[in-house]
Length: 424
Ligand code: LLP
Image (cartoon, rainbow, N blue to C red; front, side, top):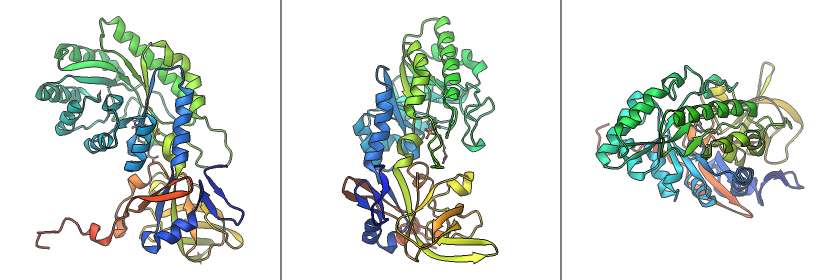
């Protein structure tokens, strides 16, 4: 049985727990909420691990996708490393027990304070630009420790995804121009071994990628850079080939054949082995995306013109992907309803971009019944906001027949933090 399925009475079940039972126990105050499946995260991780059998590899979870501490701890326990994009993510990774030597600090705008913390932790650090190289060297000198760096290179391969999640093209704000590689090699060498050590190369093309041939093209190009580095002279610390993350997941749920982690890894296996390097992969969405759902309550149903609307307490504030990227996310009732019709599912936020799905075929829901936005384990809670003074939702983790709150939702009082001691 799939992790999210229906029981004989028509109720949605996560592993061994009815969603309605969680909803009733949490009450209206904690609606909408996120529910995650521990077993699904384990299965997703295992798909990567098994496919990487025989490859010296680090699976570096992209914490930005879902930073719930219970999720990060679970992945750390399974053996994952991480890719980080802020000093706070570095702190969280360390608190969750991640081995920092298996983490990569990436980003085009790392601050001096973040870089000093990164050097102290001895995680791997991506060099993203000329100024970044200088800032990393400054941090290493200030800490009296060498920085182990990967050069983030733009392979200039089109990932064929939404422009907002495309990152590896020549005019992207991320990484170095590949024609500038030599400048960075010289800079790192000149800084000296006690300041900068060239530990590897990194590329990340984008997110929601559906074609594995794209990864193959990029891996070939990256191996070319590895050869350029080796031909240019001694590279005693060169050890990592980081091919980033980006594998898409089946949001449409129409049985479209999307490549699995195994398809991806089998396609690029020759490239992964060719350089004699430790491979780093940085999946986010494909590790946690299908392990979560946002569960809302139906407030009411209305018709305007030719459109029938289901209005839920869940909105773009809790889940912005449809509003921001026009992303399609599957919506399913969590309990039996009436006659099936076609609806736009919208929230209460004061904008017309506040929709979760349009033109969806769903059973007519009773007021108070549950509706789940599926595949909401990645880039959903982490991108939630307080717009319209909506509160960040509660997160729940299911493990077999048990469930527990793994982060409390915000209260009105939480929203009013920051005024204490001020005359307002
Ligand atoms: N590595 C780097 C350097 C990245 O920038 C990212 C994602 C990943 C790995 C993980 O990519 P994944 O395997 O999750 O595709 N908010 C957008 C997605 C932004 C992705 C940012 N970078 C969304 O909701 O679709």
